[in-house]
Amino acid sequence: MLRDKSIKDIEKILLQGLLSPGMVRALRNDPRKGVNKLYQRWCQKQQQDKEEQERLAKLLAFDAGYLPANGFLAGVDEAGRGPLAGPVVAAAVILPTGVTLPLGTDDSKRLNAPKREYIAKQIKHLAFWAVGVIPPQIIDEINIHQATLRAMETALSTLCEVPEIILIDGIHTCRFPSAQIKVVKGDQKSAAIACASIIAKVERDSIMRKYSQIYPQYGFDRHFGYPTEEHRKAVIKYGVSSIHRCSFSGVKECL
Image (cartoon, rainbow, N blue to C red; front, side, top):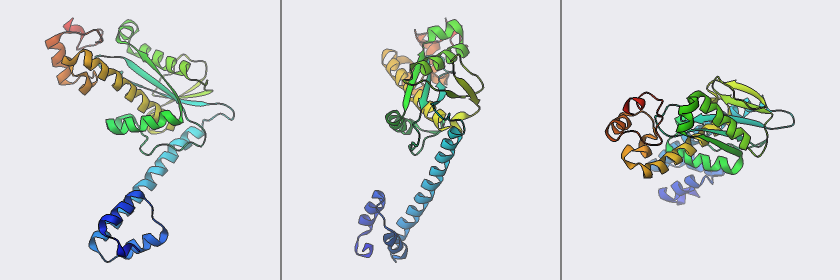
């Protein structure tokens, strides 16, 4: 019986999630204030988990509305359009039918770095995925818009399966021989796009951390190439590195 257990022991049981209906009733009726607080926290967590499952179900239902009868659907998103340095990265993700999304799967911008990396690992285990990486030299040559489309095309071409339908975050399509559907704010509506958003961001951040070891003076491991005040001051002080986008305002003035 829970009444015979200490508050610490009950807390451990709650963390493990091993509660039968009878244990829930006992928890609710326990006269101890400390146990009552644990019960209230547990109820809040249950409600949060329910709401999260409902949100994830909506993401999957959105994709199901476009899923071909026989074939694959891919979600595509990018990371790194706005930075002054580093590549633009796109990811393409195909989720298997009946998949259970990791709790917290969302637009990558809504997640902190540890959460993104944790979810990305889970996605990589359960989905087909690929990335396209376009370096700054090509960005300068063909412009960021075309480079982003090329990154998407590369990611799609690298997938181990060819998707019949592609959901793309935003308002542009790429040159790939499959039906494409533009989804504004797709990383908040589509399961596959949300997963692609997370993988693209995590992969690009990993690349920028490696560049930070080569160019520690710029702080790439903190701002990841985005035009923060710290980054702008570093460009003025140290000049332009080999991974800066020389066609971008804030960089070309320092050449």
